[in-house]
Amino acid sequence: VRLRELTLYTLLWLTCKFSDEHWPALEALWTTLALGGKHSDDGRLGVNIVCIVDFLLAVGVHKRNPLIVPLAKRIVVCLGNASPHATVRALVGELSSLNAGRL
Image 1 (cartoon, rainbow, N blue to C red):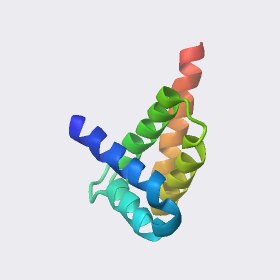
Image 2: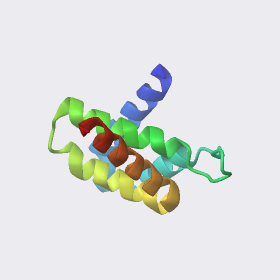
Image 3: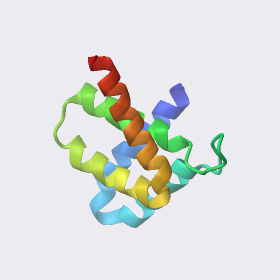
């Protein structure tokens, strides 16, 4: 878990610092990390997308920095381009867990 967090924090920092000049390279990194060559239980690619979405939401809540929002949005769009179904499932899963927590 620690290595995963370190990798995601590093990639988020690189994206924050260099996204304007090097977005195609950073997009390729996020896509590669999201797909990771692993398959989910139903055989689809994108199992890392859930971890990335969880991470982005946790960082957004923890840091409470409004600059994170457009950056996270850009990353989630990138994830959606890489694996639309997995990204929608991850986002709906997060919304479902929020709704369950309010009941």
